[in-house]
Amino acid sequence: MDREKELSKLVNVLRRTARMATHSEWTGSGDDAAGFCVDKYNRVLARCAQLDPGVSTVFDPLPAGSSMSVVAVACRQLASYFEDEVGSEPRWGDWKGIWADPRFGVWVDKGAFKDFWTKSARDIEDFGEFIRERVNEWVHQHKPADEPKKKEKEEKI
Image (cartoon, rainbow, N blue to C red):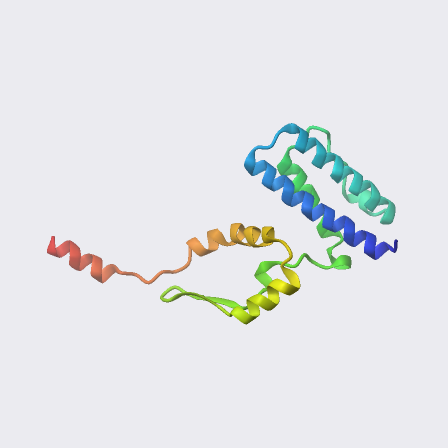
């Protein structure tokens, strides 16, 4: 297998492992899952070090008792090391067929969504991850103030 294809597969494993580790951390999976993810990271790191010796100067294997959040961070960092070679992960945020107006709600270009879905959104987990990443942003969007109406109601009472 050529180097680029193998790196792409290894980075994909790292991304999935990071996602699974984060999910397991949220749901409270047992230590056996953490051990599996640590082992997977260390095996991928060893192979990446064979393909690119510079990796071993930056990244160290994880100790056996590492938490799921540590595994997730380590996987994401190692994947980002190779991102310029294999490309970034397709993200829901890259899709431009949606826009929002606080006064009227969210509008979606159905044709653009269908095209995006068939070309790049292979897994519903991507959508869930996008929502988790953007919830804080959505909650803090500027909303029109209803201050004059509230003051009128208070004065009538």
